[in-house]
Length: 96
Image 1 (cartoon, rainbow, N blue to C red):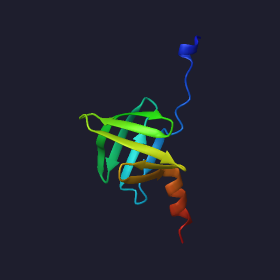
Image 2: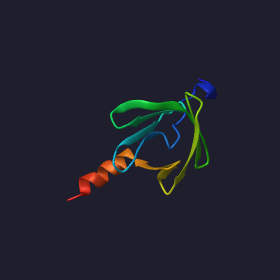
Image 3: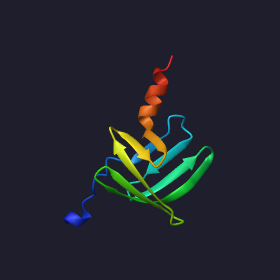
Image 4: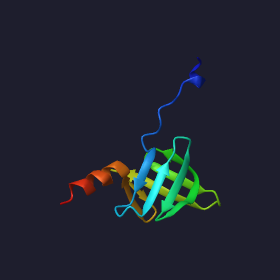
């Protein structure tokens, strides 16, 4: 097996990120694609993303561009604040 055939670990940002209310769910896929759901609307936005350091550049399938930055484990995507899905679920379980 050559080094080109060796599976690579996914980027640490890969996974599902959600707003605190769960309305917006953004899944960053290991292949550099993303799928964003809004409410009951699945795949409301889809496209590709790239990561440079803690900065993300998005290009949706219509050509619209956006940016994001991860700071202290929080994804700031334009006007949205997204947290890892598992962290939001854990917080919801801890509520009285």
